[in-house]
Image (cartoon, rainbow, N blue to C red; front, side, top):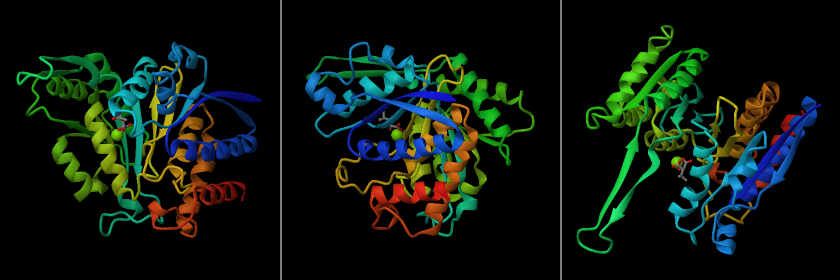
Length: 354
Ligand code: IPM
Ligand code: MG
């Protein structure tokens, strides 16, 4: 029997509520599928920071190298500045574990109402392939003349041919396997003639390797508008780190709720573990109330199983999620209902068992 060793970082806020829900569903899917998930919980996050002055153990990143995957809840707490919690935990994990693909489905599930009038599930079925290792997020820069009128900050974007090429190839390959075979590349080369012109050139080169994929580039502002006005014309969206961050929040908002959208931070070379997370964040306003929507975490867990080679288990969990949101009886408040995290989780395990 295959046993997958999974490092769990439930983290902060509702991460601690939705990750146990996800673990329950994964455990059930594993026993149905004849494999096992062995979870090792790591106490990292903002509470850990408040107690120890750092977000994770010294040498923490080396500790996770030995796992098959990482299941992450959410990181963030009003008592810790966001740039500390993100820059000292999420971003180092993504960058040092070479998870260079951030894969984010942006799909309106049947039964969920989009804030876009008149749109149904057939209109919103996109996936973002976000560059996850460099770009605007590399962290290169500094500040000088602190506290004076001359105070200056510099934050440098770094775009390399190698990283653009590999993310573009991943995006085109993904598009090739989807029914519509479309790829939209987000650029801003009209205003950023160094980094984004390189992006455009490399993406266009890679496009030539995939003649069966219909490729188009859009300036990111126009693409953001297009996601709202013509989502049905979009399929795979290829974007740099910052552009992808922004576009995927639009994507999850038009898909009805941030509480549904999952994401994978993937190292396609498989030399290090990949990391799967709901993209909603720690939601301090509802944390501790037991009403967070567990669907995004459960879906992220399903993506993790897919990555580990358990495609059938992924598909079964997805069908269960679709059945639960499709019949509209059990819904958490973000979807207009009154169900609790527990009730929604039970609905999913019931559908999975049916
Ligand atoms: C996300 C988040 C992160 C990002 C933050 C927490 C650094 O917004 O995963 O989308 O910008 O990547
Ligand atoms: Mg984001």
